[in-house]
Length: 202
Length: 203
Image (cartoon, rainbow over all chains, first blue to last red; front, side, top):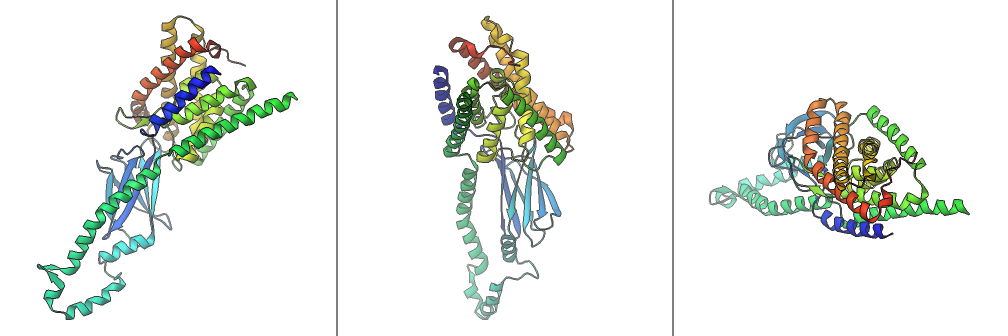
């Protein structure tokens, strides 16, 4: 069993190396904001997926809505084509494919803030009161209060959005627990095989 | 190397399943009980190897080690690779459950082919022949898989030569590294446990 000991030590070393460098699988992550859907695509070692096709489908009836390509940062953004759930499919080369489902709620919310005609969100009722106020109360340094607030919120949430992206990326990576679990399964199968050998001997 | 879920059409997936099932049953038939631990160790090596990512070259690729697994196991490599791929699909979401048949065949067939090509060279005692044939064995394993992946993707409407070129070029660095790993492993096994390299087909 000497050689197996050596191989096992080798495997443990591989495992340590392996938890840093990762393999080939593609991921796509999308979020909607102000009527635009932003997508980010990356291999699970963190490399961006460059110049690959992104297809957008209607989540309900699977109708192809639009096709685009990722840029050199692995990003692709498009105007929301319709107020339904969107299934965003990334087609990287060599048989790599993944998808992300953007829910209808998320899409509708993003369209609401973009003031899409016919889909006015409920908070718009407040504007009547605001109009009654003197103009100076709704403007700060000449900038409409609403625009200013939106800008501030966007700036503040940008860091959170980035963190979320990072967490999402992290979650796609195999954990040490998965690796050890897998090795355990293999040992278990070996045990089953050896069990049958001894059973057949008796 | 791992083709994802939903890329290939049903007939291709089914063909993959049938071919792999044939290979696996042949492998199980040829697996002596004495060799179960050996198969398990190589399965583990194969399972973990896909996590080692080779950052050189135009695309990101990872180690496969199918040449080494094939050279040491022969036909049982099919069972080892099926188990390894299933666990990778379940735990890491590499590839997919439906594409398991095609992926197993794409990776295991070159393993068995490199076994038949190089098994007789591994009994030689000339260290240069040993080193060179083991290196080639690692290269052939990856090259064969890359070509089979390209062949599977032809059915999705991509031109064979374009995909083949893309997949082979992406895996060139991996081929060299696998060749070196296989050569190191075989040479050290020759010293420590020469009985593992019998070169017998066990038919």
